[in-house]
Length: 298
Figure 1: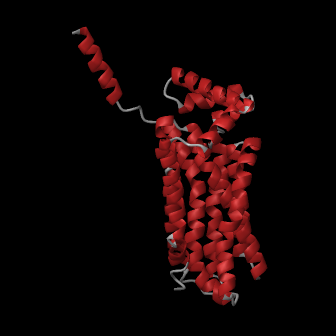
Figure 2 (figure 1 turned 90 degrees about the vertical axis):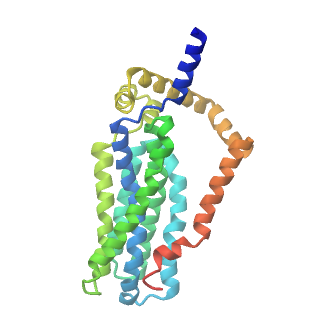
Figure 3 (figure 1 turned 180 degrees about the vertical axis):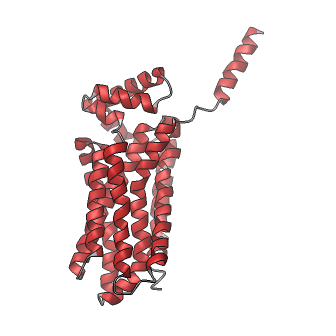
């Protein structure tokens, strides 16, 4: 009888759903997602602005294509730089720097008097997008409980689509202005989200416990851990796991094991990795960017 009760208790524990993340974790994840909305807004607003921008500056088809695609190409070095910068100065400061770069690019494009300035502003936006878009999912993953990391990091993708919608709304709202400067107002509005992100990164969002512990900031890390965990015991366990992971990285064990799992994956990880790569590739190869950027021109 006692054995049967133990089996039932164990079965009930296995079926029990994990506790949801704290409200603070969800709030910080939503704050980080503002950064993803930057990319979405830029994508959406440029599609409408191109229609008026082309006539205002007498741009050729090749110039329009180069201007539109340049952000995606220049975002690549931004992605590579993001990890090094984030490890050096912290996650929130990196988000601040990326947003500042984006803001500068948006204002340059809005005030551009020639194609060179326009292209330079677009390039700054590309660097900001590449850097920021690599860090905000990392930030969310480092503050989220393991069982909810996938769900919370998916908020970033949702934020991109919300940003695209906001860009389209901006096009409709300002298209009624004179053609000489309506596109400038559309692009200038792109400076608002990065400004909000800069405020959040400076005054609202703390750095992640992992980064704080890696820099020896024990007291600050403990304060954040108490906010993102649901009990003192969970905070201690999380701190212990983070320290163990950091120790593995310093010895090179964590780095080697991580690449080993990617380069020589097991069957399960291999299927997961293959599926992820194929989905990412097909998202671009299906031509969705044409639908997002060029409908008004087409």
